[in-house]
Image (tube, rainbow, N blue to C red; front, side, top):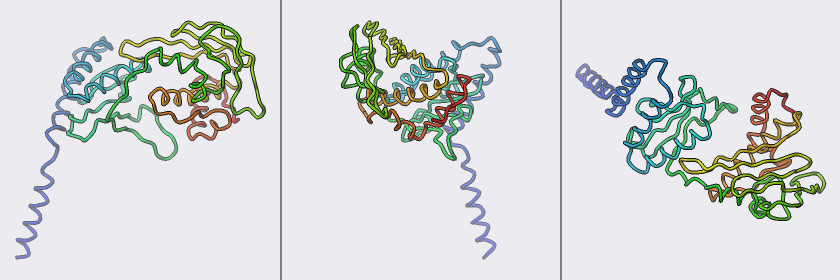
Length: 293
């Protein structure tokens, strides 16, 4: 009797284990095999256009809302990380550097999940502390902001108070004199400023504390705006300045998406969790020693 019971239990375990991969997982592995064969046929002469065609074809196969999110992500990645090459990876849109996948979009229907995900490989080098996220659930991506909306955030005094490291006594959208008050300075610091160029919604140039600032706005084909900042910061403090602007622009992005969190500037920015990492990363990129304060 006991032997029969053990046998039945053993068969039950084997039965549970024999389920193996799901149909969706097997399909993904077949797609990966086809991708490797296609890559071998193309050889080293294969370029970004081949991979992008494959990615766009996969996106077109997706049901909504995954298709809209994948198209939006594709446009964002092409605009913000042009060094990454589009390619498919297990049948998913992915983006690689030196042929190593850095990030990928997994639609909800791919593995019958509750939501889509945007994931990163270890090549993305997201390391921060002892634990960090490597994927994010996606339910919706907000619409891209056009240059006119971004221009208003750069020039309107009320919106500047939500994200910028200074306050302005007037709208910066017109050439002429103005006053900028640095936020978070130990003592009141007001700078006599001159707006030198205001070509809405393309180029904004002005001085701040004896330094030149230039904003360039460029509409993107996939929707949205590429915003470029030029600021001639003293090289001794350039990594701190870059890290500070990085955080300001993250706050601006939240503001434009309708989710304002209030500006993080001055001494407060150095209390921000990612401050030290950003300061060190920009110092490494720019070839300078990161100042501690």
